[in-house]
Image (cartoon, rainbow, N blue to C red):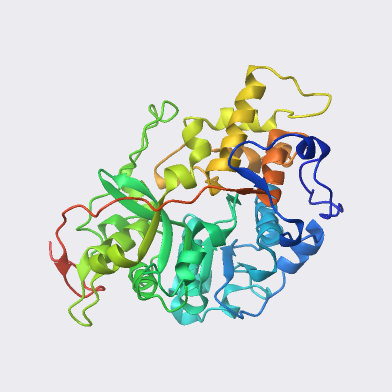
Length: 421
């Protein structure tokens, strides 16, 4: 038994015999039991649906617009395992946009942080953009780490980045994972963001994004042409994969979908004459970036973004009567072992569809009702990954992305003033 189900089983289980007796692969060690939250899944789930006081910067923030109970089972298990792995030092808050909900985001952030369409509930575009509006105000006000609920955490956040963020001798104030969306330019993603409260970059980033949502705007269509962003190049992901080579991508729609990233790029490339905030200088000194290809998307990299292959390998029995030790078994073992030893998290995005990329991802497959337990089926490689996410630790250091900003034009302009074209 590798993981604790979302039924009535206790999380206070022994380490499996086959794991106890076998030598763990290089780079993996057992987590001390006292560092794990041993409540049942039901107890943790019930706790996640209650509002908790914010007592420090050690907060994990996540969002699902219709609330935790409406999340797909695999995503619920992701979040439950965050709580289990991080223990009592961190508080996990999953906020929503449900009127009357105890965990409604408005209990944490005032309406003044949000555009009218978010407040009125009239947003009619991709639901991910609701999360884009939520994440930065929470980090600005309270500090902590934002994590998308489609993320399987594979090591403690203290060891990923937080020790460096809270170290008074460290220059780092914001940590993120970054991908190349333009040649030679790494762009920070927003699915994992770590900062202490009152971060000046976070506040300005959010202000820019909210400014896109003017009166009457209810979705992100055309955001790449907005006066605040139109001077920036549209995003063209630098992902090369056989599984994606025949996918026709609308880069303008994709840029609208990730306009939140473009707002950070705007801020990085300007100096505000009103208060002297130098985005490029701040970014160079205070941003702690990691390579998302290695630390977030390793499963996609190792499988060439082939969701069907990922689904098949994770679904294979690793132990028990159904296990067949053949070529596929060894492929699955190598994949999961590499993930447990060599990457900080597994991010399982959905295909954005109307975001310019029409392709099924593993998240889309696990969303299906008939696959509701395939991410945690007893004895499977997926269940072993889940077990390892809470009971194993990594011995390696998470290394900073060694990347220098390219020579770029830095504009001097108010951060909310359009660039003349």
